[in-house]
Image (cartoon, rainbow, N blue to C red; front, side, top):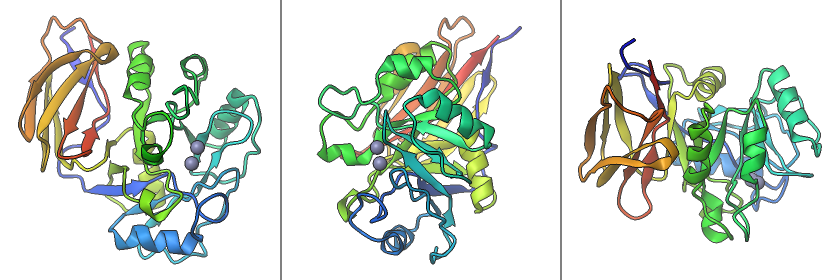
Length: 290
Ligand SMILES: [Zn+2]
Ligand SMILES: [Zn+2]
């Protein structure tokens, strides 16, 4: 069988929609009431938002969304590592047994993302052994904005590469985890979706049709055979990583065309775009299939 690339993206030309899935309000430990937070994101031109208060599911319907698609959800927080319950229709009470929660989320046809694994003094809010052992989550936060002012590191691409190297198909999410006004618009997800409805956006997120960003804008992700083309507005360097994070190549340019060699020994590649300041963007992995 000739080598092909399995990936999650639509044909180029599908609209890109920007959103944040990790947002706190005065319903938990956020500093502002939900409507104020929603107004802030809407004024910045966001297309979708999920309020994710700690162990509290609120119905976003009564709030004025200003045209944003509001995704219902919450952050399951007590009794263990935090995770996002995305597209939640019922509240799942926190339970020490996180695998039980993940099974319940899957049963409800919602989906889960494991949050900020590298948070805290020992960079170990969620140990790798747990990420390895749990099943049924769709992704992890590879960037969590609020950790810019907390212990640990916002970045968790190291955790992601370890999972991907083991053959796990998990997506990389970038979220603000905003608690205060200064946490807003640090990190977001940009989804390919023809419709700006919660249903269409949730489907795209669950399927990996998005990239994470802290400021680099990706315009095009195109795959043809074994060739990946990524075009940005403002990258200064673009890096291609393969299994366990190994760097295959980089260019100092706004775009890259990368041909996966027929004899490649790695199991996936992913593209990181680095821009000015702390601006970055991360594509989802492209899996090699033979
Ligand atoms: Zn958290
Ligand atoms: Zn949070």
